Image (cartoon, rainbow, N blue to C red; front, side, top):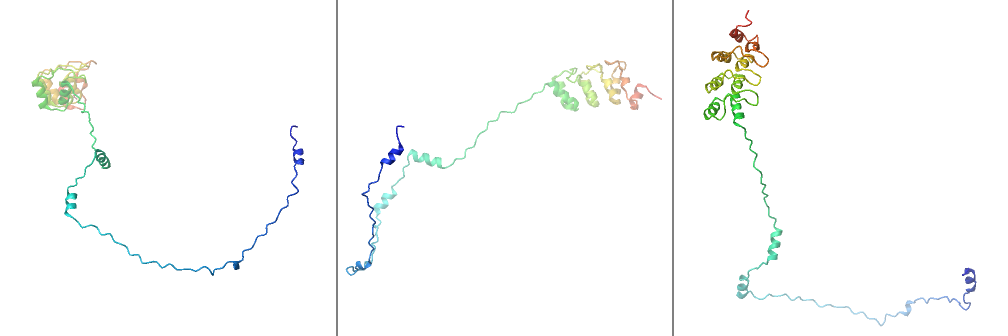
Length: 228
């Protein structure tokens, strides 16, 4: 081995000439301290008399100077003051106008007929906004709608403005078919008085009398069927 720790330790010897010397402290004796030479002299402070500040007398010159003083604010100070004071801002919400739904004259006219609004029905007829024989989306004409509503006065008004008592709907029903089916003897009687056909057949081959409810005695008597 390159290094031998045993040889290194054996070669090291402490010097024999070293003799430890014990330190013997010298105790402090208070007798050695003499206070005879020390004389205490008490401090007698003089009473402090404060000198009060006497401001100069108020002069008219100072008054004139102070009255002419006008504070000048720079832009920075104004900006800070504006920021320090909250300002309530009202947000403006722009709303889009409501979408207007427009209905055709036929739809409006059909609604007036269903509700029996004779005044509006007459206005539409006089203004010729619609044709009285128009077939609505319901598959019926205005006269059919009036019969289904059971409004005899509306039926008369439509016929006055040219409605045909023989007009058929999409299923081949005449106004008399509907009057018999829904049990309106007064309307059926009025239509018959205007020459409505009792032999007209609908798409199913049914005549108006075939649609009469046997319990409706007025219609049964009117068509003279089922009597007994």
